[in-house]
Length: 118
Image 1 (cartoon, one colour):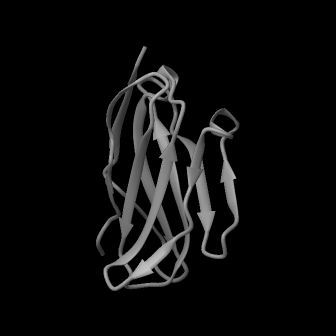
Image 2 (cartoon, helix red, strand yellow):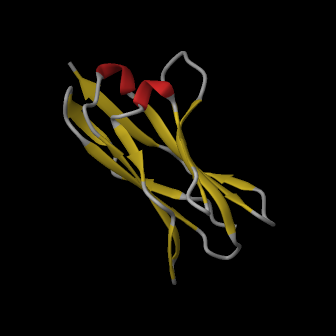
């Protein structure tokens, strides 16, 4: 089964914006898609997630700055975006997409590096 694919990471100055995208397989029905991040020397943490019926949750540290889109579906599969505004150096991390399916478990993407310079 194909793992999710992230794109949109990169280097940005503090205060700037980036948008990450995650494309997941549409072979099975999706239940939840979420973004997690892991900074060097730290544990992976949830950044933002959304269920298939639109319920969202965010880490306190990103509330008001990051927005997760609704899950869209087309012939290629499922897509979700993470709009990140007012980025801070402490947002620097590898951001990974997690796709959870009703009947196929959870899949992780390879991750996308986000670096915020001060």
